[in-house]
Image (cartoon, rainbow, N blue to C red; front, side, top):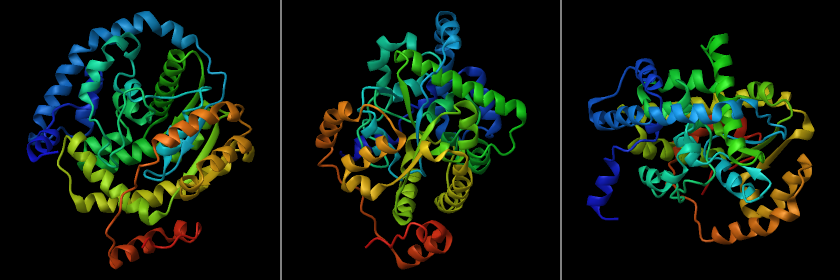
Length: 373
């Protein structure tokens, strides 16, 4: 890509919040103390798009609300959890090849409360998306598996994605959206209603197939998710924490060029990554005790990459999921398409490795990882 195209891509005003309710947009601006002048065009784009899509949301409500509210999610969801950059997306893509599952797609998250009435415009609206994910160059497809956190950013004032949209307010957004710290009982019930409604909408759109969900933010929400889905199954995936650190830093910095509405400090981001990993993993270790053993399985990213069929079979066997033989041909086709994909390589300084170990040794020692060479 030449420099002019790179510059144009960096300066795009298109933004995934374009489908937000105008009232929600005003609330989010108030909560996060507005946007910076540099991002005024992006903010204007979101504002105008929000107003324009208002009638579409109203039509969606009239046509589908009653049907969706009556729907019962009878099959317990399978929920993939794990810290960001631990392989959750790869595992999600892999398992989504099984035709028994449905999943939240990128398209669903763009217009979470109106996508059913806009399917014919999907190709056009997909132009508002980059061709590849900025953190790892994986191709972006509107119908591909995605995390519901992006939809929550459109539907609710607090979402991990708002840490990326409003980096100056990232700490408050992180605490409220990931750990629910500071949310009162009414706000918590509102979050659960919104989450369940969106899950029902996706299920309705997919002929009531079983939900396969992936969202790193859910790694700390096990208790709440079990209140919504008492029989949910969980898959936790973990990866070498040293590589998680470098990959997460890269993700945060590169995504800001696409999503930020405020200026960000690289030092603040590095501090947040260190601090948030500790809080996420400590919360996970405490909450995973709530999941019955027969409904929880844990896998190692490196083993999944080394022998994906073996690890997927392990998941199906432990969780007693049907359909492995039926899914296998599609899984193999997916793996064949991905055979040329290469992971990122990072330049490593000794002081950085020491910094990571000093802070994250509780997982590094537990999982017996060594610094990457």
